[in-house]
Image (tube, rainbow, N blue to C red; front, side, top):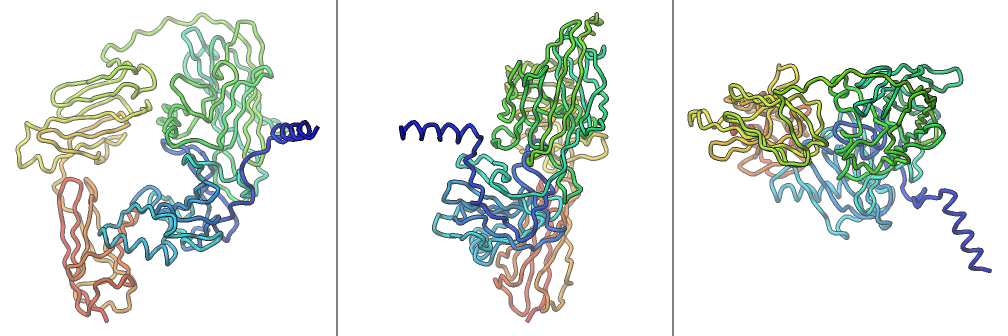
Length: 562
């Protein structure tokens, strides 16, 4: 009897949707209200957002606390990306991440700077042993900032499971004030076979939607036939913020039967690149807006997508009448509903237009080598999601490789043979990508081996050879040569390179290496005199800056300090 009662309790427990996420385990990492500038898994460039971006009132320097006890398992400082980031491993197996930090707490800061001086590098990645940097719940660990690829001051906060998969922190009980439902801004239809159409169109079509008095949305009736898919543009907003964030869940129903669900509470870093298969990549390229396609195309492995019928694809028969429903939700359960009446209308479509014979056919499942004149492009199998026809032209050291409106899963390798150049000119050559409207040449990471320049890229577009004969620029900011700066806390120098960009730099005072932190947004190198590394009354500062093709500049100056 006891076994039966326990089994019944066990069954009821799980049928009521209980989750394994401890609601009170993690605490707010800041002592301010949680207001978001970015939500979990919202759509970003080439990836899903892996955490919460917590607003810090447009300022830096807010105290940041450990969300639970544990130990610092990883510290990474980089110019871009997460900037200054801290990872804490917790006894329950989860890891919390705190990124774009201004600086660490004194104990952690001292540990990091010691390692930076030992290795003579600003950018560093450390993996402290379990007992080295233990932390208690709500212990000060850092201060919020704007380092790395941050677009403004905020704290990027993550919770990862034991497999390093990011999870939505809101599942752990973090409370965001939100009574505002998501908004659906656009509806789009996609004919998916040769005999399919939507309103007579055989390509993507925009479908008008109208908000009803009861708060739901309804589309204009559409006539369609064959296999079709639908997609939406939708965003969400919390009560205390005016900015738009991503939605949490999308469900679709066809004639009352569930068709597809998009659950944005968990994903893996291995799959995040496939965001570009989930959205309409061509529409993003042309309109800078992301349509979420509510059907699963070939070679889309995203775990956030669950199809209940036919991969979310609708099959519209002639003379049929059906209703398609989309329900978009935020994490708090606020919903928006869109109803789409569909009438099946067969229509004789025009014959297929002949393919452009000048295009190069690429089989997605085969490796391809494209060669012409002094340029070659190696495309590994499964670089493209499906077979494509692309433009491949070479003229005067310029490669035109279609346009960047097709997403790639892997990087292509582009080689330029520069044997025709004089030896004196080869040193300063690099491969660059031409901006969309041809106004700027962007340095592409270039390797040189003999007479071959190589770059790897995940973008189609125009690539050409560029030359950088200019040395980087170095300018002192808050001091002058032979000046007294006894009252200064920091030493600041601006470095820049307008063509290929800064590759590395080295700074020393009195011939000893010093740590100068590099902010790529402001182009500032900053030295903190509280490091007390080499300071005397008369000090000789030397900074060497090198760009990506090897041009170098040196600043040598003297300052005095008591």
